[in-house]
Image 1 (cartoon, rainbow, N blue to C red):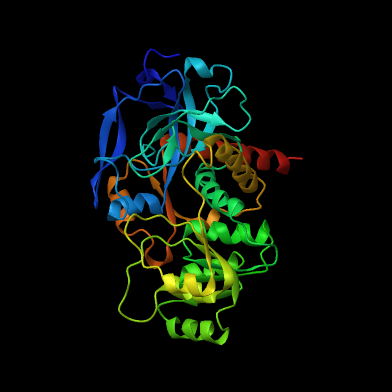
Image 2 (cartoon, rainbow, N blue to C red; image 1 turned 30 degrees about the vertical axis):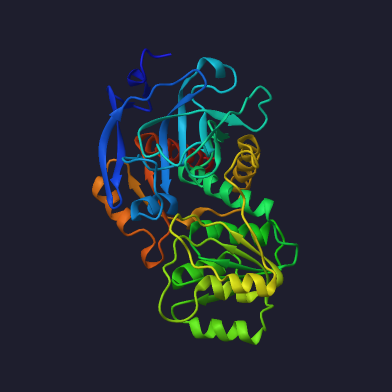
Length: 399
């Protein structure tokens, strides 16, 4: 073990007494800075960051739709890294050089060259989960649901284990029935994953997707949606569609929308989705925002709709159970059942501060999806993979 983390050298990346990280000082403000070299506690592992993808949660903090306990923060939690140090209580349970991704423990800390987590693995019988009461109305675990990443998995693909785990946690606890007519609100990255899970894994009869951006709707059709509505251009048509089906078109709604500002024209998109549901239909809330949202209580009452959500609270959904879900997410990606390629629109070098700022400011515009930050660790892995593939091609051609 090195004397300090700054003595670690992984794939040629040297750290000094501090590491670089992206710091968000408040809504709309992000900068590349330096932070203290993280300490690896006895129940922690220290990870050298390979890649971290930016999601709508990070953007919600940037836009002021979610509120941390205090500023500044280091955003980022869709993450993959390589173990460079193992705490004493985890010896023999995880090893230096392993690649790890995780779900939970924190929304923060990923957009840094090094980060420490307390991992809890699905099948670790010796693991002990501990929790604490947050200021945000739920109990959270001190641990993160961790899963080992195969050497063959692309760095960016590994970061998508986290959002797919979130989607699976929601859908597995609140599933549609096989053959159900399903509606997905919002066609961002998580919704694109949800459409694939609904059609490829859970046996949905059909999926209707609703968004206001045509490229995202086109991608949803590619991923399995049969019918799509653009609320900007098809709003009156969607209202007429609800009327024509007399409030009983769908069995199930998966609401992946973030903050939605209530406009002056037409009905709110969530009201339209509730109109699509049959009496007694299931409305699942997935998208997160702390900004109050418009909900039609009349439709809930008139149609007896059921509102459901999968809790963050570990008293109802322990972190080790989430580790089992993360393992399933890893398998679905690794076997190609879920195609994660289209949910990442761009790759940015970790040190390109201007590009990161532009990507945060323009997130989701023109139908774009996530962007992924790649560190020198990831770049070295990509180069090594390309070299191996080239050697195999060369060897094959010489037979």
